[in-house]
Amino acid sequence: MPDNLFIPSVDLRIGSLEEYNRRQKEKAASRHAKPKPRPCITISREYGCTGYPTAELLRDILMQRTGEEWVLIDRAIVEEVAKRHNLSREILQTLGEDNRLLSEVLATFSSRWKSNYDYFLPLSQHVVALAEQGNVLILDLGGAIVARHLEHSYHFRIFGSEQFKTATLARRLNIEEEEAEKLMHRQQKVRDRFTKDFLNQDGHDPALYDMLFNNDRCPSDRIAHTIADFVIKP
Image (cartoon, rainbow, N blue to C red; front, side, top):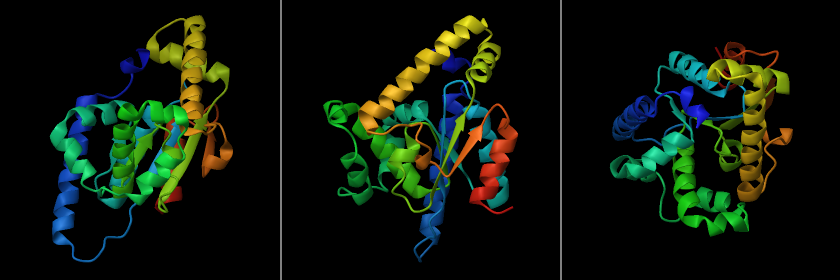
């Protein structure tokens, strides 16, 4: 899939996730009082907007400001985690057998989701577990919908004009603009269908988000710094 040409390495990000889990274990072992909830940030974007560069830069800024590990989660990471039994088990240890938050999330999903139970339940379990741990950036995955029950979650969306998204895809994938435009429309339809059919929501609904960014006017660095300022004071 063309996304693979500019998505950061899954292996590198899995390594970051493993380090994140190691540090959470160390902190849990050294604490007696209940830890203060940490932020969960979700970023949604229209296809062709600069989601990955924004999320990667935001992670770096948050790590500098907090002095703590932050992890970036997307579909590729969740699917890889599901394949790695040990890492999957460590993440899901934060979920009890009767997890109220997961139950609330699943209750909002459509009947079509239930027909794909074996696939979407593990995916949702991992997303919810990581969101509950905090210090997590969730890119797409319906994060604003799945994590909206969390008190300390913050949700952002990046949108852009067709011209901007087409030009961005053409440049990053090194393809003709006509091909990029077709790809943009095709992939956006796939995303919209997923959000509507499985999550019973319209991902374009501004009410789902704390802040919206016009990618035509706001480059990745500006978006990342604005989100960081909104979530954690400089």
